[in-house]
Length: 347
Image 1 (cartoon, rainbow, N blue to C red):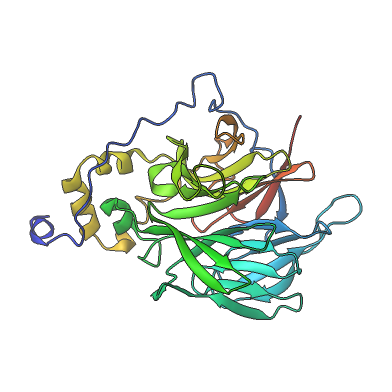
Image 2 (cartoon, helix red, strand yellow):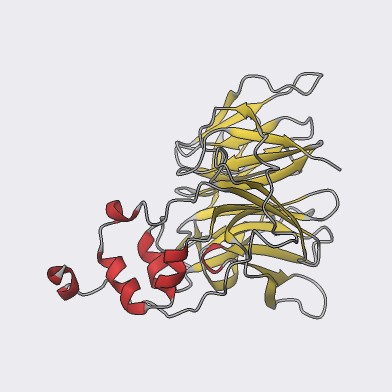
């Protein structure tokens, strides 16, 4: 312990007094329920379906942390068929969405912004911006004109506890123009930039800031164009991916509910600096997701409509919630439960 205290910390943590987490006990949209506890397994391949998307025919696509992208078809009764290998990026595909030409656009943690044609051939669209690398391409959305908005999570280039301890913003929101093939930076200084979603009218784009429990809105049109504000804050956990449904509502997967120790650490730079000295291998437990599945629904103005829980923890580490064809499809990431699940949406 004495030796640890003498070692200089690799970071200079910023102090932040995190707001008290919403209560799951009080009546209201955060109140605990078991809506996710009845989720059924759609496919075990991939093990960790970070993001889920669908093509025009209703087939499901999702990637795994080993680079493989899978396609899941459904029979006439809506039952999922065995997952088929669709492509392999040789990286870690996170965000997936089809463009108007039928290409699957992918944000790959290791490779950057990619395009996968219907034959499975992979092309790199962007891996640099303004002369700097795209460090950790994470999630995306595509506008009607083909413009791609995507997150570059952190210049750390990987998920490390040291960044949580440091509590400084290293993420960016980027834009790729397919006509000019140019990538530009829209927003910098984001606290672990993660999920991305356009509004139904495409007047703004959202980006999740996982480490500050909030969603930030960047205005694309109107008098506020080019500025940003907070769309939703003090969420009950770490927001991951954002999807938009046919109503224009946003669904957010929360990878973990709040971790009290992390909030305590943010209030004490000394403690955070000490924790940052420890090897990453010893800290995996400190940032592991709580075994409590959680997804939320927000209206177009950022008001919380409701929350979907699995307090039993059979489904947890939720990254994605997709409202599709009467079901809520759930994806997860390493550290959470495995496989794509879905639960019937009740009116």
